[in-house]
Image 1 (cartoon, one colour):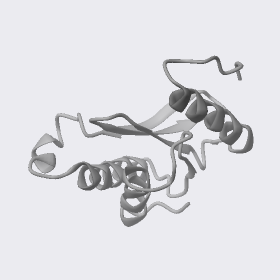
Image 2 (cartoon, helix red, strand yellow):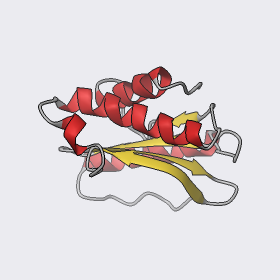
Image 3 (tube, helix red, strand yellow):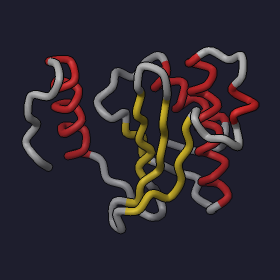
Image 4 (cartoon, helix red, strand yellow):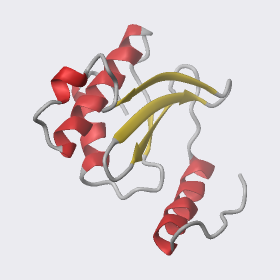
Length: 126
């Protein structure tokens, strides 16, 4: 992992420092990929990564065109929950039922926990 440089603001660099500390401890495999979450000001993204092959196994976001109809009229937290369910469906279709959750340096509340709750409701085990 590269050394975290000061980027944009102290808040962003603090999150990147936390991200590096988290990534030292968790690792995704093909049987149990790493479910990582990225939260921007407007959108939420989730992807399951197999770190042994460095491949993205499944991904979902609130920008997906196939699920755009279900996101209409929902607030950001409800959209995050739907993103968690969508990534869970994609993983279950590949017969993967367990993941390691990577909060990516974000605090585990709000939209980040909503993605985790949606993934659990979708059938994933952490």
